[in-house]
Structures are given as structure tokens and as C-alpha cells.
Length: 313
Image (cartoon, rainbow, N blue to C red):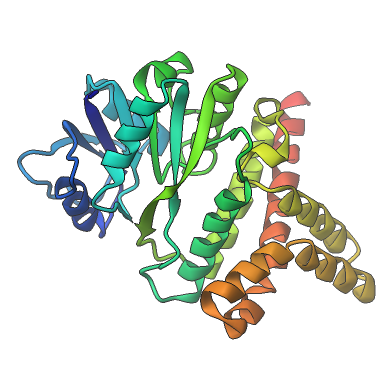
């Protein structure tokens, strides 16, 4: 079997110990385990068999790429510091890549059992899980780096993670798009589930959506793939357009409300997933977020377009 290297970027990550414990006690342990500290206020403690690299804060893309340069393994696995892998996660990655030489990258998914019992954490968990499950068996384009495995050769062929951004937004997605542009095969492994211990808030989810949309506009030419092949589903794109119109027509309250309702309605798949996972009361509470998140994306698009226009002037 090929050697496995796991790279964990972190910045003031309280769940790092849990993340490393899971990685070091599974049925298949990493041959190389690198933690890259991206400018934490206090240096994280790591076990003696884990290599720690500290750098000034430059963002997760730079951190992950720096970690890769310290490794020699043929298989690269990236795990976020707030993610807990299963005991067989690395073994499943290894077996699939060994069995299918044509696969360049394997995307894990969030487990349904969100370990953080807050509204925002559960909402993020169910939306991200459903986004990936909804892609189905089509050829996937894009990546979400909370837990993903790549062949080193494929990773290096596209230059690694996109370092144009110093914040966690689309640096991972752009890596997947670059692989797809080369005709590389990326698969979503529905049987490789991990638990996400992040503790977002509703404001932080909205801000992240603004930033992701803003940064996507900055690299729009890199995203020329069918939305059915990404984990940003067509329904979200439609909802973003509807909420953009709703904000423009906000003085006409009935029109704005109708557009907001339509934005929620087109995402009925997500409402059903929320209801099936956490019940009707949770789904009712989540419904307004299915308008608020696309509205945040619309704001991000507007900000991104303004930045691009400013560069042209």
C-alpha cells in the first residue's frame, strides 16, 4: 500500500487534541502526521510523533501547502482541526484509491450525528451533508477540505491549494475545479463519514457566505462548470438570484416577501433533510436561514463585482 500523510491546519483550535487522537488511534494510522499552526496566539501542544510547523497567519491554503512540502507520501489527506475521523476513515481512503487508480481525489462527508447541539452547528452540518449527498453519482467538480484525500501527483499537477486568499473560503473548491479542468476524477465517498466539532454562530455562517461569494466572483473564470457537478447546488444559485432581486425590491414589501418565499421553496430538499434529521421545529426555525444565506451570498456577489470593477477602472 502507498504511504499516507495527513496535514492538519490549525489556528487557535480547541478541538485539535480530539482531532489528533482520532487520527492516531484508527485502524490505519498516518505514516506522516503534520500540524501546521497558522498564527495561533499560543503554540498548540502536539504529541511527540506529530510534526509541528508554525508560520505567521497566511490562511489555510498556505498552511496546507506548507505541510505538504514536509511530506513524501504518495497519498495526501487533509483534515481540519475541528474534525473527528472514524476509526476506519484512513483505511477506507486508502482502499478506495488502491482499488481505483483513475480516482484523483476522494471527498468525505459529514456524519448525520452532529456532535455540537447548537442550532447553527446543526444547520451547517445538515446543509453541508445534504449538499454533498445531492450531487449523486455525477462526476464531481470542486472539493471541501474538511476531510479529503488526494494523490500527491494530482495535487502537485495543479499547484496545490489556491493561495490567492488568506481566509477559508474557496481555496479548496478551486483546487477541485483545477483537477476537474484536467479531466481528473473526483468522487464523493458516502461511506466515509466524519464528525464536525465546529461551533459556528448564525452571524458567522452569514459572514462566511458573504466571503465565499465575494471570493468566488474574484475567480469566476475558474468556476465554469455545471452547477450540478459541484456541492453548490443549482437551487442555491437560483435562491441567491431571487434574494438579490428581493433586496433590490425591498421597498415593495409584498414583492420582496414573495421572492424570499420563492427562495425558500426552491430549496425544499434542504428543508426536508432538516426535518428528517432534527424534526419539524428545527425545520421551521431553519426556513428563514434558507433565505438569509442566499441573501448573504447575493451581498458577497455584489461586493465581488464592485472589487472587480474597481480593478478595471
